[in-house]
Each structure stands twice: as C-alpha cells, then as structure tokens.
Amino acid sequence: MSKFAKLGLEENLLKAIQDMGFETPSEVQEKAIPILLEKDTDIVSLAQTGTGKTAAFGFPMLQKINIESRTTQGLILSPTRELCLQITNEIKNYGKYCKGLNVVAVYGGASITDQARDIKKGAQIIVATPGRMKDMIGRRMIDISKIEYCVLDEADEMLNMGFYEDITEILSYSPDDKSTWLFSATMPKEVATIAKKFMYNPIEITVGGKNMGAENVSHEYYLVNARDRYQALKRLADANPSIFSVIFCRTKRDTQKVAELLIEDGYSAAALHGDLSQNQRDLVMKSFRSRQIQMLVATDVAARGIDVDDITHVINYQLSDEIETYTHRSGRTGRAGKTGISMVIASKSESRKIHAIEKIIQKKFIHKEVPSGIEICEVQLFHLANKIKQTEINHDIDTYLPNINEVLEAFSKEELIKKVFSVEFTRFYNYYKKAKNLNVNAGDMSEGSKDTVRYFINIGGKDDFDWMSLKDFLKEMLGLDKDELYKVDVKESFSFFNTDSKHQELVMDFFKEFELEGRRVSVEISKDTGRGRRGGRDRGRGRDHGGFKGRGGERRGNKTSSGRGGGKRDSRRGEDGKKEGGRNDHSRRDSGNSGFKGRSRRKSERPNNSGTGGRRRNRN
Image 1: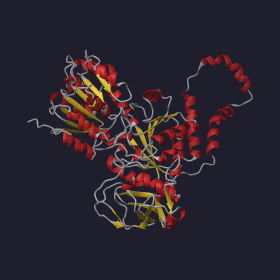
Image 2 (image 1 turned 180 degrees about the horizontal axis):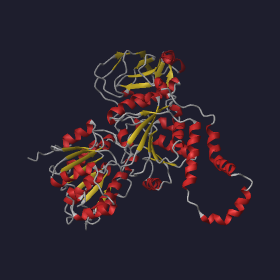
Image 3 (image 1 turned 90 degrees about the vertical axis):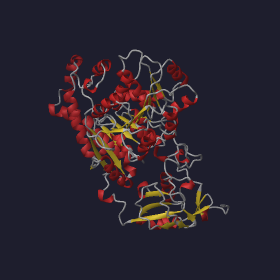
C-alpha cells in the first residue's frame, strides 16, 4: 500500500498521484487529508509556501464532492489570478481520472462572459479571486448557495491585499453549514479574526511553527547605504553565477526600474508586476520557468502565483512594510526538499526590521559582507573553469580542428589557458578593479544610539501623509539621503522623525519659517523615544504642539491613508493591485520628480496669499 493510500484516498486519485510522480505526502498533506476525509469540519492550516497545501485541500475536496451533480459544491478563493490559474490546473491534474469533473477559474483580466458560460455548463468546483467572484455573484452569474466546501487559500495575503470586505460579502451568499478550510503561511491577527467570525470550532494544523520560515532556507543580510543598493544587487548576482532568483521590490515602479537596469547591464532579467497584461505575465513566467530569465524582479502580489521549485535565491531588494510578508518571500526558495538562500539588502533605516523578522521566523540572520571586486573575479574565473570542464564536446568541430590548430600552434598549453580565461576575467577585472567597498559597518546600524535627534512636526495623516510619503517629502525638502531620515511615525495630526544629531541645525533652521499650502509647519525637538511601531496607534496622548492636537487611537497607515496625488486610495487594487509600500500609483511623486515642489515654501519665499458580514449559524 502506497503512503498516499494510507491517508484514505480513493483509487482514481491515487492513480493521478502516481502519474505525477508523488511518492511521499508532505507534512501538511499527512496531517490535513485524513481529517478532511473523515470529518465535515472547519480547519485552519498554517504551513509555508511550497509545502503542498493545494494537494492537502484538493484531494479531499475531489473525493467528497458528487461528480455526477452539475451543482457547484466547492469554492476556492485565492489572492491573485496567477495563483488562481495554478490551483485550477493542479486540481484538474489531481482529478484527471474523475470523469465529468469541471473545474472553472474565475479571475480578472479575462472574459467574464466566457467564465459565466463555463460555469453554466456545470462547475462542481470554482477557483476564484475575490474581486471577480464578488462581481459575478452581483451579476447573478454564479450561485454558491449550495456549496459544501469553501477554501480560503493564502488567507493572510488576501487580507493583506484588502479583500476582507469582499470575502465577507462572498461568504454571505454561501450556506452557514458548509465546511470552511483556511490555509495560510502566517497567522496575523486579521487571519485569526476571520477564523473566529466565519468558522465553527476549527481544527488547527501547524506545520513547523506559526509564522516560522521554511526549514531549508538560510537567511543572510548585507548592510549598505541606500544609494548603493543596486550596485550591491549586481555584485550578489555576479558572485553567484548560477543564480536563479526572484528579486522583490516594494512597488511596481521600482520593480520595473530595477529590471530595466539589470537588462541594460547585460543580465537575463524581467519584471513581474500588476501593470502587465495577462499575456505579458504568461510570457515572462514561461521564460522564467525555462530559465531564459535568471533574475525575475517582482512585487509581492505578482509573485504569489510563482510555482517554480528550483529557485536558488530570493533577494529582498527592499523589505516590505508588512513584516510577515518576508515569510512568503523566503518561501519561494528551498522547496521540494532543496536548499535555498534568502538575502536582504538592508539599509541603515531597515536594521530594526531584520530583528523583527528574526522573531517572527524564529531564525537568525547571518550578516555577510557584499563581495569585493577581486572576490567576484575569482568566483567567475572558477565558474568558467567548471563550465569548460562540464561542457560536452561537439564533434562537429572536428572538421575545423586542423585550421584552428594552425592558428594557435605558436602558443603553449599554459598560454592558451591564459588566453581563454582572460576573455572572461578581463571583462570583470576591468569593471571591478576600482570598485569601492559597499559595506556599512554593523556598528553604524543602530538607530537608537545617543547620536540621534527625534523631532515633532505638526503635519500627519489628515494632511494625506503616510510614513513613506512624509519621509520622501522631508528628504526632498531637507536635501538628505533616505538613510539619513528614519523612525518616521505618522499620527493623525502630527508626526515624528529622526535624523543624526549632526543634521539638527539644518532641520531646525529650515522649518523656522515654513508653510505647506498656506499653513505654518512647525518642528520641535521631541522627548518621544521613537520606540513605538511605525504607523501605530496614537495611544490617546493628544499632545498639544503648535495648536494641533492629536486624536488618540486613530490608526493611519498603508491600509487607510489617502495618496498625496489626489483622490482617496482604494482599499485594494483589483485582482493583483496590492497597495505596494503604501504608495499611490497616481501620486505626483511618480512623475519622476519629487512631486512636492511648488506645494510648499519657506514663508520668506512666497507671496502673502496664505489662507487657512454575516454571522455563522451554530451547527448544534
């Protein structure tokens, strides 16, 4: 008896498993499948990306639904269209011997009428993104009033993308006595809330530990100045010639920019983000899977659909604002029993995030130095030697050997080796021979040192600032580097920020007579230590600085604040439009300039024209 047969799966499913070459169930499959087959129960399963979660809920659902019925019995919600399509294909493969099975994918960016027609033919299982699903339910194209099983896959990511209201509305059209299976890589408070609201006495399965990183992944970080981030990325790529990686950026704009720079510099790279059409995404992913692309630069949202087992490195070009997102990123490597490396290129202002992530994943980061130019030349030289050693001889060259020998007969074996290797070595040596040291001393990373100043400023959330836009604003106004401004903490009507003490005179002098859109902006030295979490609660202190009183307890941050470019930011961005990094894509900052020029002035420089869901039924 096979190991999968011991889980209680039927013969037609076991045959499909054999065809796919699965031999041993993963831990999450071993724990979840027997429970879901034996009981009609709600379940919360916490397991990292790449641990076989789709099979853990896919096989039980296929075994329990009635294939002969054309009624929709199973609904699977996933955060992105890539993941939606991936799940759909996997379920179809699992059910290849289930005659009459119809699994339909419902997602944005494709014809809604075609999807409605496929469902009308009788879809026992629908795999959907929340936005399109809500739309089709509203148009009465889908009936989920008789579903028996509902899966919330990558629940933490769906909630992080702002789909809570959509999920609530979708579930309100479903029966109260259905079984809800929630699968998530992490267990933030939002996931716990949805489990409490929509589930009845769920059984909890944890693979590894809550929010823990994957076992086969090692975690490294490299400390550099923000302005050297791209140079550090290139060196890490050059120091790992066989790299096959996903590089994560915070915004769509940064993703596109980094990919373009890599391509210009001769690397096989491409961008994957929400502004690409479905056809463009498919082409990028096809090239990545075939390794025509070695470096895929992606946003967190777009990367949710990446299903590639042999990724060697995950590089965090920028860390996400959501600390838990790191778990998803690092889970892209070290899959299917293989090892992987997750690298973070960290600036001075991100040192605290490294420590916060360590607590979440319960693993330590290894601090490593960005390789020097000479080290990279050495790595590339031996990489070429191994490549030559492993290259199979093409005997079609034999015809030309006499002429080749004639050309090279004057050289000794040693001279020929030197010439062959000089082709590669000289290129790297010329580029790196005067390369500077990019590393920042680890001792310089502490933001809590005595050589720092905390400031109070009387602008905040009500002025349409979040922490990132305020940081950009201050950086532009003061002419400081991004790393020279840190601990930016935005409240409702005031904010805090830090600089090194050497910039105190500059900051205080600049804001002596400064106005923003006709309103006096004042800055004071604060006694606040800056230990609170960025974008956190005001704690109700209601400080009175400069006549602007803070409203305690009001949270402002990436989830709710509006963009500075006009118009309130939507709580989500379509199927894959996660609000990356809290930026509004329509902000004036996206024009390539700061976007703040002309909106604010020193008082002495401007004319005197200033003015002032449904509750779950108890099954008992």
